[in-house]
Length: 147
Image (tube, rainbow, N blue to C red; front, side, top):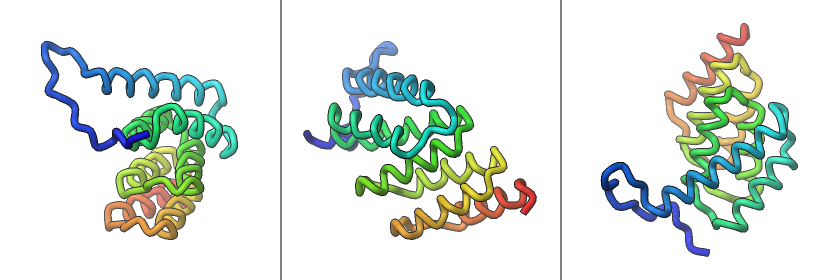
């Protein structure tokens, strides 16, 4: 399947969404429900199964993955975020500074300093170009976690 992540949507007309946006939103809602059913400590294998099912049905749409990650972030589920990033890495899918930023910022908010450092190491080993903001978020996570 073609990668639709770089497809631009037409401007919204009278509040209506294009078909691609509506489809992505439905997929995101389905993914979110499945993750919610797994609980806050979902294992890598469970998240990987859901991710694989999504990839088979839609292809590598990075916007869905980013939306999913953001939704996990607003649900304050740092372990699931870290596991999702690990699944992406194992499947050789794109990881970028945005994903690192969302994940480490979430860890800071949840005082998960160990998870933040693990994500930092994983992102560096995946050759994601990290910046000062990411490093500061990781340091802040450690401070907030009492380390």
